[in-house]
Amino acid sequence: MQYPKISIVTPCFNAANLIDETLDSVLGQGYPNLEYIVIDGGSSDGTAEKIQKRYSKLAFFTSEKDLGQYDAINKGFKKATGDILAWLNADDLLLPKSLFTVADIFIQFPQVDWISSLQPASWDANGRLAKIDLLPGFSREAFLDGLYLPTTTKKGYWLQQESTFWRKTLWEKVGNKISAHQLAGDFSLWCEFYKHAELYGVDYPLGGFRTIEGQRSEDINQYMFEANSDLQSLREHFKWDINLKNWLRFNPLNSLPAIANFNTNNFGYFGHRITNDNTKIKSSRWQLNEYRFLP
Image (cartoon, rainbow, N blue to C red; front, side, top):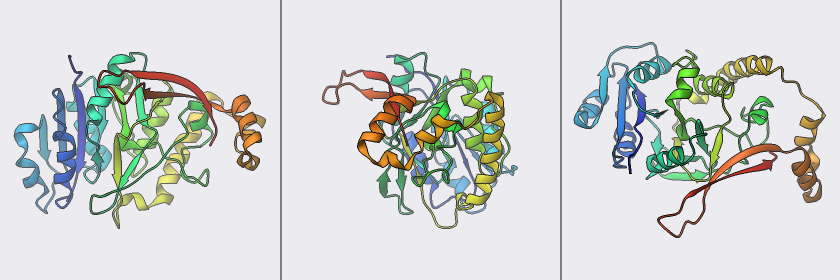
């Protein structure tokens, strides 16, 4: 089998106590056509020295001052030549075999431009797998309604960056770069992607976020400020307005099974789910199904 080239970019800065596990989660998979790019922002805590020990396994590595996380990510992607792209921050992890799963899906479904897991994982500060969430699905309409802004619903759905992969052709359509936000660069990129393609959900965990006290993502107010601004621009792009259908989708009475089934069947979002057709055999193939869902 000819595996497509997957380019992973990891930005880091003073992450000496975490970077080994992050690198191992990528390199340890043994994916045969991996292009791993690591951009360090001039760390002073030994991070660069730890990365240097794996230099022979990396496609590119540099350690120099930059303008922050998204500047480093953009630098990394300028070096990327893969067919499939993603980034993994220095405190996060991929799950075993995730790169093989991603490659299989993109090979089997050429119409799919980007994917993300419907089962996003999270680790605690010690690197223990703490939980796996279940998301109802993805759709452009749900995104426009704000379903994947964490303060929109009580459940606080996220489109998990660590589990999101896309084709280079889609990356080229959005200008080969991420907006220079402080925190919500990922959300900004999803807004740009949604202008060109629907997102497909994968019923397998692919990666996850590690929760650590004091990390930048704790500044939810700044994240929401940036994300809301980008979402408003996307709504203007599609001339998107809230209407009766949207009210029915978020109706509190959906907690009642009969009403939930009626509203789902008639007003639910259309999602695309990719599943394994038979988990008991090695030669199983992926199935792509369209379905309706509500939050």
